[in-house]
Length: 74
Image (cartoon, rainbow, N blue to C red):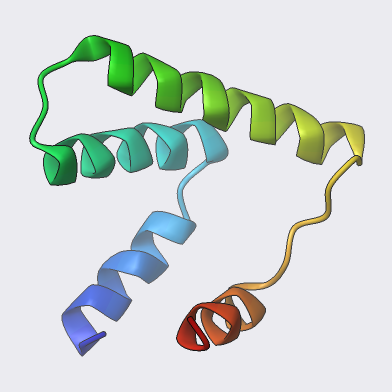
């Protein structure tokens, strides 16, 4: 990533969870190029499910450093 993208990511990570979720949906919609609201709703449900799992402690979050390292191996 470049410095501009890194800056945007840092700003996005500073948002409250609900705003990050909304931003995620908007970005995914822009990549998919679809106006199909069912896709956006499916992602919203997925995000809610993941948030609930985090709150319930059934999954554990990892740091951005660890996530980035995992992604770089793909």
